Figure 1 (cartoon, rainbow over the protein chains, first blue to last red):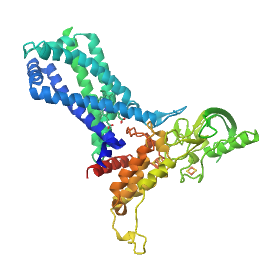
Figure 2 (cartoon, rainbow over the protein chains, first blue to last red; figure 1 turned 120 degrees about the horizontal axis):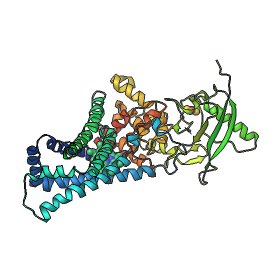
Figure 3 (tube, rainbow over the protein chains, first blue to last red; figure 1 turned 90 degrees about the horizontal axis):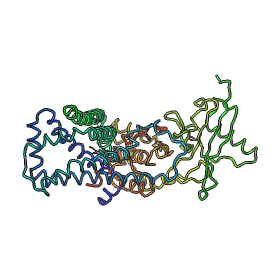
Length: 222
Length: 253
Ligand code: HEM
Ligand code: SF4
Ligand code: FES
């Protein structure tokens, strides 16, 4: 019977919600470190050096994160295809706005935009980083990180792509945060309103924070 | 008090001969419809008109015409049972529409609810989900325990009764962008599993009903909440969370 647990519709949504909550926690950590770049060059370099060189982070946490991201978007595609197949003939007239939020109906589109951003981010930050460390094997300079970030955000094109992507992340999480709890059956008269409030706060504050960091460095570079 | 002015309306109605042939939207005009008439009465008038013109009347499901049987499935202007909350199509009145308006009338759209004719769909997928576990096995040998002898928490009783108001209309499936049946199935699971008599088979029930639901081809739940808004009985999403909980618990215990 437990085989059905993850192949059935509820099991798939449970797995989806777990991977999403994992990403939410990861993003909070990512944001916290990035934000120190606004406060102190030294702290940011220290933290980045630690994250970039600690073997547990590099060879355990990083692969887990990659798996989590891949799992989430692949499962997202699987659900989307199954859901689309469940209605072969579309309505001639459908008024979705009458009963549900735009965000909740368009998770695949906000998700696809995030995926596009992740591809760009990967190409932009991660591949040069891997190249630096593991291919060209340049000697580690613990003070290089801050300068790299400042240099990156001096480009207005990049700042615009980042800002736009975080708007889509906000839309994704506006619905997604509380939805993940519902998917796991975590609903309670007393706690659910609080979860919804925390979800809205997270969905706005974290993306706005990331946007702030990008714009901050851009303005400083002028 | 009755309104004086009749409504002139353009109707775009889905016409389909049978479950094999393809259908299409047809346009009809009706005039001088009383704002006090119900939506189904307006459909009756359209059908009388079609019969008088020697045309095939529009087939649609209806029975009680008072919001209790759940048969009057119609997707009106992009919403299950049309505009208005916690009502079925038979409880919808023409005063909700404006003179000169165009009204779209379509059948429930879901792979699990194939069209039989015009606006009539086959909802027997719901029956098969019920057969899979929507019951309790009671001893009817003559020494059945008096139900009132078992004390039940008022909260649980209220929630079970709320869930039991589901009339199986399928508006939840029709409204859901994924044609998911989670609201219906969760109402049926909850109504039984909240009460002591239903707890005995709770684990197999939720697994079997969800399995059948998946096999019928209903979609997954994206938690959009459209079902809850369009449900004529105001069945709460709380039931879906309860079913998720029970299902996940049943898988690990
Ligand atoms: C990589 C690109 C991404 C894609 C393609 C994607 C796609 C999706 C889709 C299609 C859903 C809806 C699933 C459903 O309707 O059942 C979803 C849900 C969700 N996503 Fe994403 N997503 C992506 C990235 C992210 C990221 C980075 C986060 C968080 C930081 C996130 C958080 C969530 C949450 C919280 C949910 C709700 C889960 C639930 O309903 O149980 N997603 N995602
Ligand atoms: S849950 Fe509501 S919308 Fe769905 S079948 Fe029951 S009464 Fe109809
Ligand atoms: S005809 Fe029975 S609910 Fe509408």
